Structure formats: structure tokens, C-alpha cells
Length: 358
Picture 1 (cartoon, helix red, strand yellow):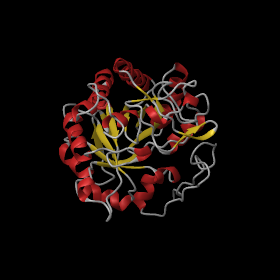
Picture 2 (cartoon, rainbow, N blue to C red):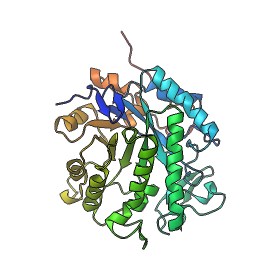
Picture 3 (cartoon, helix red, strand yellow):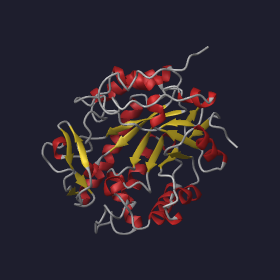
Picture 4 (cartoon, rainbow, N blue to C red):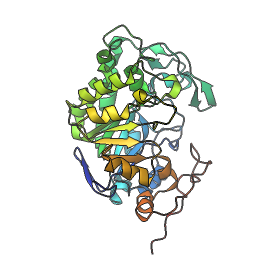
């Protein structure tokens, strides 16, 4: 059985170990949305990961909706990201850019007063993180069918910029209640055109994005993130097992770098039939990465039981830039600081101590 420390080839990306850094929004890009030197230091500190998946990065002004998050739709942003890919590669790491359109969980404050867009005019639950603080989500505008090819091209352009900026690939963000997730799931997608209704129709946009991005930069440099049993912002689906099994079967037509699943692990209160991860693993023929509350021991168990080919860690990587070494040596982990999780400067971002190298 593979070890967390064994190398693996993810499509066209050869990585040194199977400990993946999950995407983590940290809000250090400021109002310019341009990655900076502090962000380069943060990512370089964590270059021991087999693969770093960058924080979610807006593909267009329309797709933006989180104060302080970075973007990738203009030359200045692309240049900013070059600092980060260079810093990671100088430390021997690999990094992909996560492509993000927030859809209905953006806010008019980011859209020059216009409504955010979504598959259907159904408001999310919760609040947006605006420059003026938390504000309730608004009812979005339903996208016209004719607008969707333009959104597909926004993903393509951002992916092309990512490769030009030195990234090893991209991850399409189709999880966590954002635009592509909103199209996939029946509770948020109540369209009556070819992008709504049946499972096949609800999967149409995400498949179009995968195909267009893969054709533009290579399928072996394209991954995708999904969250079938995460109920962020009122998300849900009438039959998640059927929906996500169908999606896995559709993705088998492409030789992707990986599928990355953000999961809520089953507990005693959940019915087994709503646990989707096992069905997805069984249906998908490629590299399968899991993420959701793992530590070193449970991650190794997931590999040993063939539940995954690699495991992504989120919160542990925030507080432990040398997480790979800490897992290897089975030592205590730093505790996450409440200050600095979102926005701020060095504190809670690049100031976590490393293990002594004796």
C-alpha cells in the first residue's frame, strides 16, 4: 500500500509526496487583488507539500466576491502570481491555481451595484465578506443561456494566464457553494433550459468548463474540486449519489490530473446512503484526492484502504508550514491562531515556528 511520503504522478504533474496543501482563503491580496511578497513567503514556507493548491482566485470581476482575495484576470495580477510560483519552485515545490467564480455568493458591493449571477434567482443563506464587513446575500440574477459561453471562456483565459505565470496546472473550483456547484446541485439550479432540470443538464456547464480548460492547457494539468455533501450557503441536491456518480462517469472521458473531494466525514447521525465519497471513488478511474479533517494517521489509513490516492490538508497547513516533516516525525502540531486567519499581515500567516533541524 502507498505511503503518504511516496511520490505520485498527477496527470502531467509529478509530485514528491501525497500530502497536498488544500486551497485556503487568507485575504492578503488587498483591494488591488494582486498577489504580493508576503503571499510569496507564505506559499514558499509550505513548498514541502507534494502539491500546493492555491487559495481560490477569481477568474473575472463578475466572479469576485471576497474582500482581500486575489484574482487572475489582468496583467498585474498575473505578474503578482509569478512571484509566488517562482518562490515555490525555488524550494522544490509544485503549485496549481484554483479557478473561482463565486456566483450568487458574491455581493453588489463587488459588482458596481449590480446583482451577482447564478443559475437561478435563489438567494444563498448567510453573509458575504465585503469591504464594509458582513452583509446578507442578495437574490441573484439568473444567467441567460447566451451568457454561459462567455463564462466558460473566462475560465479558459484565467487558466492560460496561470500557465503563463508559471503554475504547474489549475484546479477548477466546482465546490463549496460557488457558481459551478450551484449549477450542479438541484436546490440551487431550477432552470428550464439545457443547463437545468435533469442531472445531465445540470452537469453541462461544469463539463464544458473542464473540456475547454483541458483543451487550452492540457487535461493532465487540470484538476477539479467537488463537495457533494457540504451544505454551505443552503446548498443541497435531491439525489447526491446519482448526481456525483454521473459526474465521475462523465469525467472519466478526460485524463485529468485529479479529482479533489472536500468531504464531511460520515458520523453516527448520518444515513449511509447520503455519504457520497465512496460512490465517487468507485465510479472514478483517475487520481482521487480527499480533504476534510484528516491528520497523519487517518490520512495514511485512507491510502491504505484505497479510499484515496492522496490527501489534502487545510487547517493543519495554516499553522504548520513544515507539515510534511511533522507528520513524518510524528511530533506535535502548532495550534492555529485565531488572529490572522482572514486578512491582516504577518501575524497568524507567516509567523508560525518551524521544527528545529538538528
